[in-house]
Length: 183
Image 1 (tube, one colour):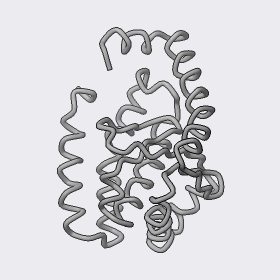
Image 2 (tube, rainbow, N blue to C red; image 1 turned 120 degrees about the vertical axis):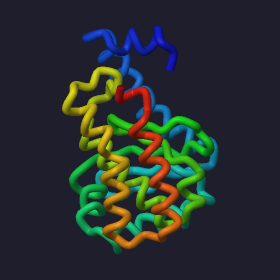
Image 3 (tube, rainbow, N blue to C red; image 1 turned 90 degrees about the vertical axis):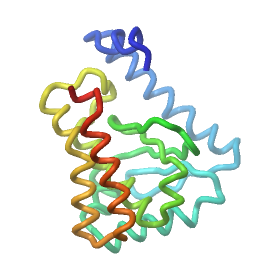
Image 4 (spheres, one colour; image 1 turned 120 degrees about the horizontal axis):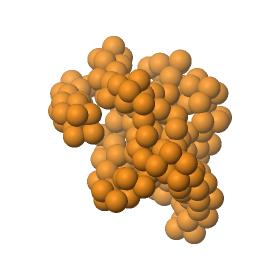
């Protein structure tokens, strides 16, 4: 994000308003764009995942993995929290906050456990900082956001995920915690 844009988003009323408008725009545009590009929305209670049709089984397998490993997290996805997840192919930046998350292809390539871990991370990010404006986090929210990848790693270990996936995710946690965002 450019420094100018970041400064605008940090403004009390203007930044919040721009983020809210952007969020509403995305919520309105994602369904028709997904549909026109041959995609579909898979609804899981209160949450929806917009994906290409050829990714449906992978997503369903990931949701089943989540349900079988942790019924509480599954309940959060379907009853307690409302997430919008949109497939974003090879998007380089992670979305972490608010209610709209981008599912990159790399999570699908990791299989059901990768998708389940992505959903858990999205739920935890949403809980840590539900605000649409992720540029104006208070100290408590910033600390909570910083802790999310560590919590996901802990969750993966508790639920006996594949050791290769866990070791790979450890690198993500280290990189995240050393990010400029938290300094």
